Length: 287
Image (cartoon, rainbow, N blue to C red; front, side, top):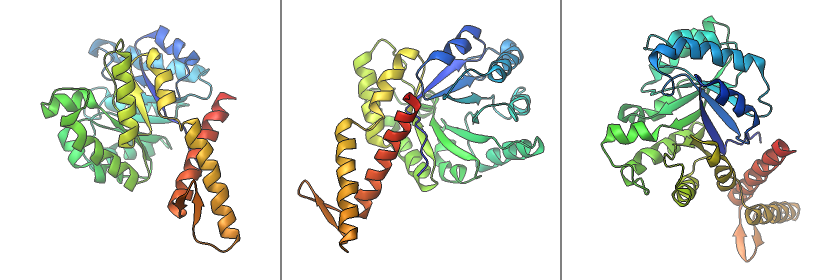
């Protein structure tokens, strides 16, 4: 079981050299170096060169580095993709993806550049949500779905309330599609960086909805996300006992085991193994 922790995924503006430097020291699991929303039109070309220089210089350690390019149909999108096609990054993040054909167009361009980069796909429009199943299955390069909840709330004309009631259907549809295609999925950003209690509740809701991690807009949000989206010590302790009990039962030729008075079947064993794998992957990053 190969698992990469993506508990905390921090957006960093590609036009801000200090931010790109600071990102090398932050305890985020992943970084999205942004050429899209965070960069003004007249700074797009300069930001592209600055981010390319930063990733080529390295120094990001175990942090997974992803570049969010501009949309394929914008004046900058194609040049962004070509520029980073063979750069030392983990993936390209594509904004506002609405169809499988958009993914296929990017894949064809990457193939022309002999690139093997993975793709992170942003779900942030009604059409993108409605087509999320075919988008997820468009190509084997697809690795992560990223919720763009700010744009989604605007497009749906729903208030961005703490319970996100108007977006719950969209969020769950995307989780379903991601799981159906074996992809990771990241929750959207929380905009009020001073509202610690609200942010903690949003992280807890993201965990309850099935997300693997959360996208962030400020370094202060990293540690709470790392804690919320990691298995708790109690979960890890119980997972270890479930795995031990299940293996002992199998040795005795039994199809079930009992832990804390509760029946344990193969589905509980598999879930416990996943929790332990996540825990081990996190521990390896911290070593």
